[in-house]
Amino acid sequence: MDETQIWWLMPLIISLLIGVICPTTGSILITQRRILLANLMAHSVLPGLVLALAIGIDPTIGGLISGLLGALIAERLNQRFKGREESSMNTVLAGFTAIGVLLVPLLQTRVDLETILFGDLLAANSSDITRTLIATTALIFLLLTRYQDLVFIGVDPDGAIAAKRPVSQIRFLAIVITALVIISAITAVGIILVIALVCAPVLMHIETSRSLKQLIIKSAATGLALTSGGMLLAIAVDLPPGPVIGSLCMIALISKQIQTN
Amino acid sequence: MSSFTNKEGLRASRVCFSYGNKQIIDNVTLELKPGTLTALVGPNGAGKSTLLHLLQGRLQRDSGIVECNSSITVMPQRASIDWTFPITVNEMVRLGGRNLQQQKEIMAKQLLMRVGMEQLAQRRLSDLSGGQQQRVLLARALMQQTGVLLLDEPCSAIDPPTREHLLSVMREQADAGQTLLVSSHDWGSALDSYDKVLVLDNTLLANGTPSEVREKLSDMTCMMGSHCCG
Image 1 (cartoon, rainbow over the protein chains, first blue to last red):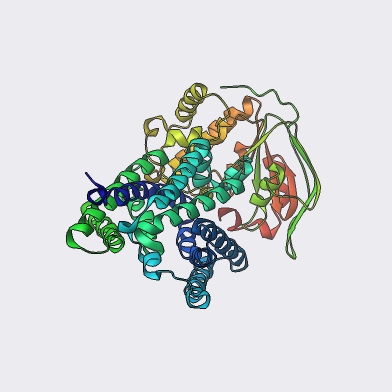
Image 2: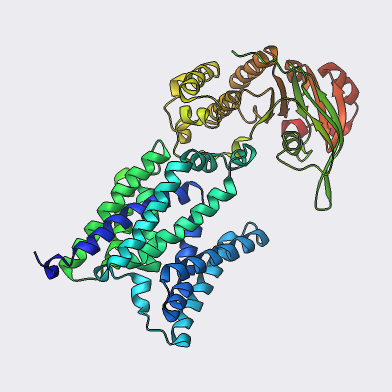
């Protein structure tokens, strides 16, 4: 089999990895009630990505810095506007997206904005795989070393602080890993649609899972099915994979709800 | 049931705490003797939860001293727990336990039996009623095996049989030597379950046996009527 005949291999590998790590990250964020942060970071990475591409450095570095900056600004505004966190976070989300879009003409960068926003799985290459493997490794590290803390912080955050668990460090680590996962998911689904892959598989199983581990496993399996299925369907009908996967996420969630009722 | 060797109890002297311009806790001095079950009562907004967290050290007091030679556990209010988190009753009780895995398993089973929840050990937290949630929280607090246990409204909004059961478990703990302070809306004859009563309304209004406290406060209008009923 020559290279042209296995053009689907890299996209498939990426879709499988993303299908696992996005819902896994979502399991952690949703159970800690920090899912708004994921959507915020998905949009906050944009200015950093554009800037990095403009100056010729790895977009992961630019996106990571930009994403963390967005999270930090949002955190500060949340302390100021207690009880109105959704409003302040959505403002930061929109602001960073706007800055990212403006940077393209300002820096005269040759960036395909549509690819960043909605993904282009079929254009995946080896550096995308490397990026995704780094995010996967970081996530596995967090789960293997801090699983009990993640459970404690999720179920009893005040108690975790009182028990002197390293809550701040774990939350910061979760933010960094979320940024890495989102940046690696851009190839597959883009920054606009990644939130569907982070949330939908988790929501489908959160009410029936009896442990965080079980939730992660079930969500990852569902995510795997959605991304690989979405990719194959997109190829078959000649549609962009990102929006197909995003649509499948919503359809799957609604179907599960109807089935449950 | 384990016995507690700590003979020091807990002492707090002239503890003060304010938030912004509001004095929440004003010059509170108290002593909890080891092996006693003490009630902390007061109106809503009196600072009962704040005082418990100050005694534990989770909140930093503005002034005053808290002395305790034992570690302290706070059993939190139900509202501070995410009851939708995917976890079973058994795992919840074991969370934060200090022992080895096998010991935790055995202890959790024993504690669930004591609080009457052994049949529901594999249930998800989200499937529990309010009274069942309180039982689980108590079992989890007992799992910590600390010398001092501070309980934040453990009997709030639960049925009388569950209340009686929880109080009997707390009494057993006190008899075994643990020092317990229970924040409560109990009043009248309900206070007879306790060895001592502290009445708090930002500052300590009364401190003594249930009958002493009732006598002292019987003519204070602020303690009449609905305050202790929520």
